[in-house]
Image (cartoon, rainbow, N blue to C red; front, side, top):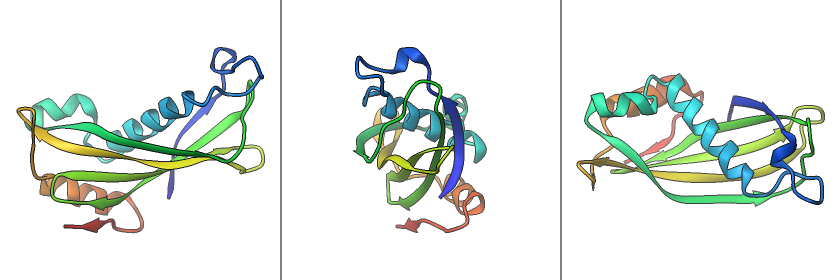
Length: 139
């Protein structure tokens, strides 16, 4: 998995217990996938020009540790599978200081055209293979 996005925990992201509120990890995951797509040349703002888009259909996160105010976080992602119309990402969030895994999971996007599922374009498939060290499973 490749490190994609780094962030520092802001005070507003913590809860009454002083740790990052669990829902914020979904935001970190989303930011990481956004940066991943940018790195492959398929950023969100370019989807309309390409006549297709992606919609999130599943998010999964398992919490392994806690981050606190001002912790630096390293977020990693990779595409594990590209199916006919879906793209499955694997995600991991670690504390930079000690490399402890704080959250891990995945997110699934479905490629859509005019609001309906469509085949993930070959150009995106090729960009993913070129970008990451280990190619995803493909259909």
